[in-house]
Image (cartoon, rainbow, N blue to C red; front, side, top):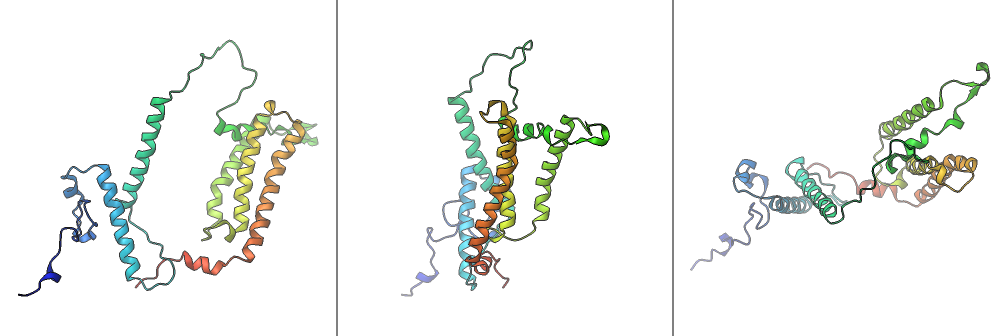
Length: 258
């Protein structure tokens, strides 16, 4: 009696693409049209994504003789699309649940005949509203007889354009491959300073509600981001001396081709 055990393959050991086992390689996986005819839902596709990602990660690590950690990339479809769709569906469901169980309270309608004492935009626009209040920085030119070159509101609009333009150009200026703040202390300090400035200028936009001297509040609006950025740079610069930069750079290096 011959032993044909090595030629046998149980159902549990088979690589199937229907979500009931380890997902098969791409050449054995049904196409999207074939998968669509099975009327599979988002949960099934999500399970396939995680199973396939796990299989590909395991296969690449077993075949690789690279000592460092491999940074593996997956194609947009179906891996990234299914993952993002699953995450987005979860958060949309949470928002629908919260809006159904905790509906927001609608206050009295606005009275068009009365102007409120304090006018503020939505909280996420406080920083922009604060830039419109930078009238003290608008210089008065003696050549114009002590008059300002432009109106304060125009000066505030230009300040918004400058800040937004700086935020937009930073990714083009910083083209390094650093993945941790300690690897580039300067740009990390720029980021911390920008976050602090967004906070301080937001506080300054509501200066009528802040129990503080307005001149001191105006000075702190620009002083705190500078001090915070400098402290961040100094701390990260000190940490970088004992940081194994070369090792961490190899740690994130892509797996070399075969």
